[in-house]
Length: 261
Ligand SMILES: NC(=O)c1ccc[n+]([C@@H]2O[C@H](COP(=O)([O-])OP(=O)(O)OC[C@H]3O[C@@H](n4cnc5c(N)ncnc54)[C@H](O)[C@@H]3O)[C@@H](O)[C@H]2O)c1
Image 1 (cartoon, protein in one colour):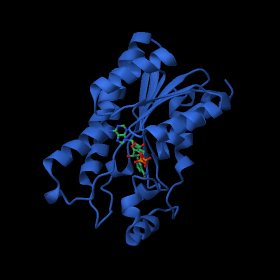
Image 2 (cartoon, rainbow, N blue to C red):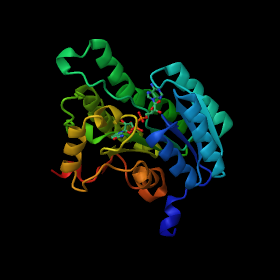
Image 3 (tube, rainbow, N blue to C red):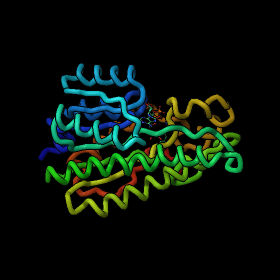
């Protein structure tokens, strides 16, 4: 196969969680640009419908479901609707996540800790398990991409804001990725993660209000800037396609070099 053909996703069906806006929307567009039909789920209905419109404008099929990724029954219904409307799922991008609230650990309530871990870590298990069952039943393998973070590799220095619960969840995402990869390789389901550095989105909006945080992040990033929203597209296409056919259990860092130091 010619090199660029390795990245083609023609006729494949992909799910993007949290795909309504920001990075999730970019993942959906990247997959559609490579030829995939895309099912998007999110809490945000108007933005989700907008992303579907953008996918359809690329000539691909799209559907949207309002889903809370921590709710098993909603995930079940969405996965079944995707298979019915678009066909067997070949690609899952586990992207949905919620920012932490900036609380110091000693002030963080047990309930908020549980919510952050449930949304940012356990939901990838809830979703991944259900899609993997579908992939195993279809017998065609598949690709799962978990969106981790550099905050799962190092504790992000966002002082005076704090986000240890988020960092802990993202560290779990990296290890969950290796665990899923180890169990599901026998079904030819490859599971990899992307660990992005800082990119201006809704998630980083609270810390971006502190000029000192922005200065510190920029200064400690070798490329001396935040990432652009479209700068994960290459990694998404690599991991979703045959271009990465021998890669599983990898954590691909796309962070402007932040974790070099
Ligand atoms: N922006 C960054 O700098 C950065 C850095 C590293 C990792 N990431 C990761 O990239 C992914 C996307 O980040 P983003 O910056 O676009 O975030 P964002 O907050 O802008 O978007 C997240 C999306 O997930 C959805 N969502 C949140 N909770 C949900 C739930 N319970 N059920 C369904 N949908 C839900 C939101 O509605 C939103 O559309 C996340 O996994 C995030 O942790 C982002």
